[in-house]
Image (cartoon, rainbow, N blue to C red; front, side, top):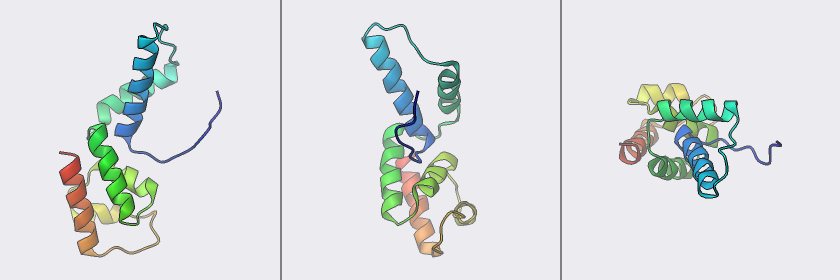
Length: 115
């Protein structure tokens, strides 16, 4: 196996990718050829995912449009902070300092998309 591409994505999107692969293999009648690590990863993301994949995808794109990095958007979706102070502690990958209004906008996106 080789890594073709590396991209920061939130946990719900990892879950979606793994589910699609499992369904594809099942539909083709292939014995589910998923490694132990991949299966444990699926179990983990299923247990800790706080947002559905569609909402996470929309939130991810909206957060990116605010000018934050992929890793920060993924972290925000994975953790779903509830306050401005919680978001501030998660913005350590950013070189920009965000205003309280911008952070409130991030919280609003998370609340709307990850109910």
